[in-house]
Length: 160
Image (cartoon, rainbow, N blue to C red; front, side, top):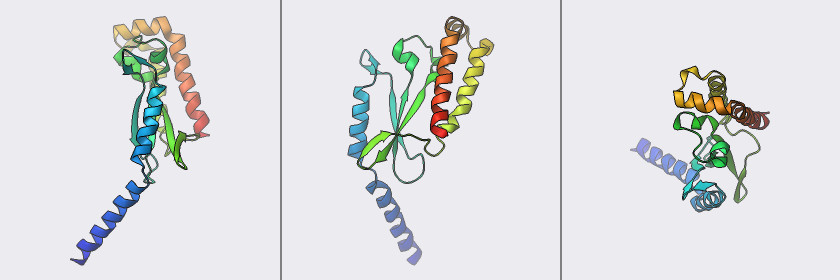
């Protein structure tokens, strides 16, 4: 009985700590503001949003996934290669507002580097991709590689 009561109290304390530091209304307000600036097409936003506790401190971060190529030329990318150009911006709680993180949070961005290096290799030599992707890459290879390099430079700047 004592173990059960202790476990119950510790569980309630953990839940209280996690949720007391996460103002859901502030998160919703911030995502709503970010969405208002997100490019879209026919009512569908290009950017997507999620919340995660990236550094396991009990406070959620907001992740905005954007794709600059898709935002500039809606519908250019097929579903096979679209994810190659998704870039995550992380917003952290500073005081009473969420701001764009200036460093990597919990190695989140650093963990994405292998994904971009793989796509850089696939774009350089697309023989293992679909015919549709191969044609798309042939016409846009330099700009696609430039975008991957831009993303890798953004990550490098936040992880140094």
